[in-house]
Image (cartoon, rainbow, N blue to C red; front, top):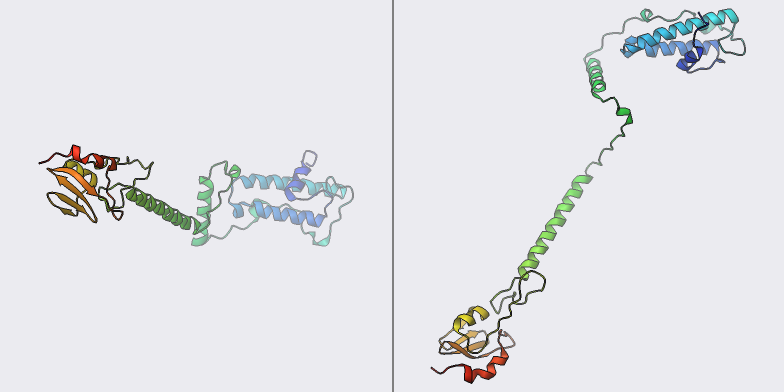
Length: 253
């Protein structure tokens, strides 16, 4: 029986070598039987593995009785009184396991369902680390605040760069590159009231012959610009060169 037995596989199964003591050999066998018994593992493949282990263990005992040493050992392997019996443990020798309670039954069913639902190559997949609790939420809030600040800054820059026809308004100077063309029209002698209103905007005080823009004013004659005064406190958009030709260009009513 022991001639065709793979004793190297037996020692590998027990985690021993051929030079171990008989007591250690039997204890390792009993411990391995407890691990492979179906009442403990509830796995069908362990029954065949346990039966193979029993056959190899019986062959090793038979070899020991015939030669006084374990298979592959270089010296005799004595038997101590505490080694116990030599008979291999059969599957039916173990009492049936007690019925598990509701909590154990649920845990076993959950473990079986998890094992069956996992893919076959789970061992090759790297585990994904869990995110640090609380950090992504804080980072999301900071990102939202930064975007809101950028939007408010852009909106304020666009509003301040919009030109206005009001001489007292803040939008007369248009910053280059913001997409709004600079207004280059200036008031000249001889323009009518419509052109003057388009360039200078609504006056603070309007009369038939004079429009007031704060300390500055524009003089009209026959509905056309005849002259002006541009105060440094509130300068007007005027063409100074046209003021020298006021006598020739402005008709007399």
